[in-house]
Structure formats: C-alpha cells, structure tokens
Image (cartoon, rainbow, N blue to C red; front, side):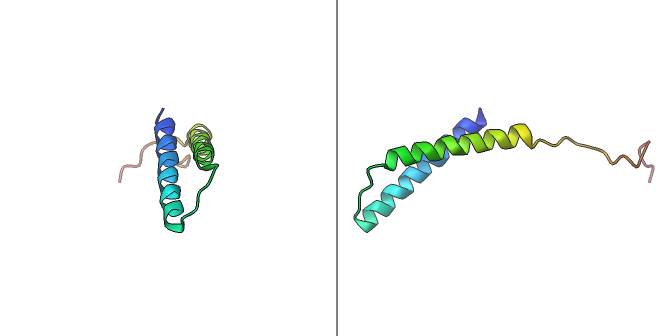
Length: 70
C-alpha cells in the first residue's frame, strides 16, 4: 500500500514541477495530466516490483554452524 502513496506523491510532484516549468517558459502542454498519470503508474509498478522481487532476508553466513563465541 505504501507503493501507491509514494507513486501518487511522485506523480503530483512531477505535475507541479511541469506546471512551474511551463509557466516560466510561457508554454502549454496538452498532455500534462496524462504524462503525470503515466509517471505515477510507472513509479507504482517499479516500487511494487522492487519490493516483491528484490527482497532479501537476514541471511547468515553459511560458514558458521554455531554462533561464534568471541
């Protein structure tokens, strides 16, 4: 669920930055909202894939059979 919130925040930040850039350059983009939605969806998918596929547990080194006593 955190991926959804972070992805939405990324999309909103992208939208705000693009609006500011367009105001400074005095241009308009017809696909601004669509682009921000695409950025949101892509970031949500990337964050979900990162958490789902690239999880690493606390693996111990297989060299030690017992805990070292030093």
